[in-house]
Image (tube, rainbow, N blue to C red; front, side, top):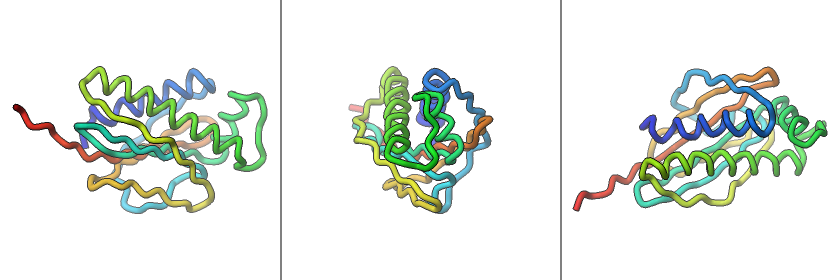
Length: 160
């Protein structure tokens, strides 16, 4: 998988959480994800389609990190993953994908974004509908872990 597709999502996630929730994420070592079970408790998933690529992105948060982000953004700490938490995760997914879209657009890659879907619960699954492998990148913070999963099929345009 090409780094030029991955790095904009990583940079965008770290920027969104730093600016919106005063939360610093430290990226860990990327690896290929072999199973569909999520590593955290609540995930935002978004599909993307464009002339050169199609793919999907998911951002998964451990419950403790999701609650901390909610408290920092909205001033209230939930005691369970409720509709407010899932709405927030969907909005973060949207902001991260939008930020990455701007970076990729500057490099000549255009795509349309779907509406984010949010899934929660222990052991929930994430199904990326791509042929390509899924790359997972863990992030550490003082309040828990987050994980980005990215899967892209690159459709190279023919030179005319």
